[in-house]
Amino acid sequence: MKVLVVGGAGYIGSHTVRECRRSGIEPVVFDNFSTGNRESVAGVEVIEGDLLDPRNLRSAFENNTFDAVFHFAASASVPESVQKPELYYHNNVAGSLNLVHAMLEAGVERLVFSSTAATYGDPEEVPMPETHPTRPVNPYGASKLLVERMLSDICEKHPLRYIALRYFNAAGADLSGDIGEDHADEGHLIPLIFYTALGKRKIFKIFGTDYDTPDGSCIRDFVHVTDIAKAHLLALEVMDEHPNQAINLGSSTGYSVREVIEESQRVVGDLKIAVEEEARREGDPPVLVASSDRARTVLGWKPQLSELPMILETAWRWHRGHPNGYAGSGKRTAENEKSTELFGDIAARLGHVSDEDVVRALERQKEEVDIGHAHKLLGMHMLEMGLLSTSQLIEILKYYENR
Ligand SMILES: NC(=O)c1ccc[n+]([C@@H]2O[C@H](COP(=O)([O-])OP(=O)(O)OC[C@H]3O[C@@H](n4cnc5c(N)ncnc54)[C@H](O)[C@@H]3O)[C@@H](O)[C@H]2O)c1
Image (cartoon, rainbow, N blue to C red):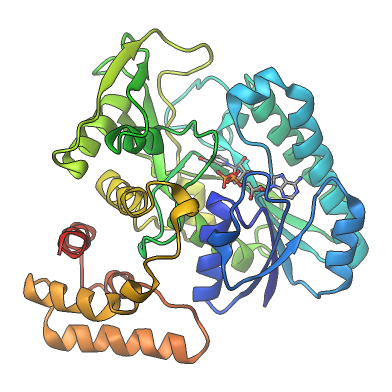
């Protein structure tokens, strides 16, 4: 199966590209690199192009036969959308319409669209189900909701099917530690906390400490980027049976900003995360938590890595190894070659798995590499084989990092 991954060089797109390769799906990235990074998709076929230029899209579809499209490309900063709403409607809505046109012309019938919890606006019930009213409070959320509406109307009249995945807070990084979140104008909580630990920022600001929540700070639902990536593959599998709907992707567990800082401090050890309290920001609801019932029943999705400690450990592994993001990539390749051997060794030494388990996991990894699937950290195989719990995996990763 061949999938066009539009916006595949971005944070969530590149992790989905990685999961495609691990599952034997051939990804082709289409990206204008406005916020994406070439290094995040090294070794993958890339078409440099812009959604806003229909000629770029047409030639991508003319030169390839795709079974489906994953559409991640968007402008995705809430504050920027308030400053430049026209940019958001242009890139997100007009860009998506161009893509749908090109798909209809080329006869590609399956689309997974990256939507967002920002389509809901202020929560009226928590956790939020997909049936919650959609009253976005900023142009970013409104632009994504418009695309959902557009897809719903178009798919009624044409042989096109879609699933819109409404992500809550995407976070964490691939277990390998070699791809992660790297936005020039970073606005997300967890990278900002780790930038403070690394001394790249002087202070981490908590906006609002007087909310009606147990510790006064906002509560959010963090979902691991690899779990999001895997949900895209599941969406493709079920799309013919369950087409044309929106599905939340969240862990269904809320953590407050203070809890995230506290847990991050534990993860970074002796490094200091300096924190300052600020007034509330306009438009930040106190609590945003997803109901993930539909994702579980329709997609059969079960997040494996979305517990906060795992999210933070993997994010830290990426940031610590790449304090300058992709600008500092490339030097760990030789080291990575030894990773599998070392990882198995540490897992066995800690007593979490037996030597036989390591051999079984290595065999499974080799089988996947032999059938052309990309390398996956041995720990992920062990987790999937039920040999390790997530907390044991975290412990091994820590030893591995500090060896
Ligand atoms: N990160 C989150 O927590 C989150 C939450 C909810 C929804 N989303 C949605 O998920 C998607 C991916 O988010 P992300 O955090 O990976 O963002 P990102 O900025 O890292 O990735 C977006 C990618 O799209 C590309 N792109 C943008 N406009 C383009 C255009 N006109 N033509 C071609 N390529 C273009 C960028 O270069 C980039 O590689 C976005 O649609 C975003 O709205 C993200």
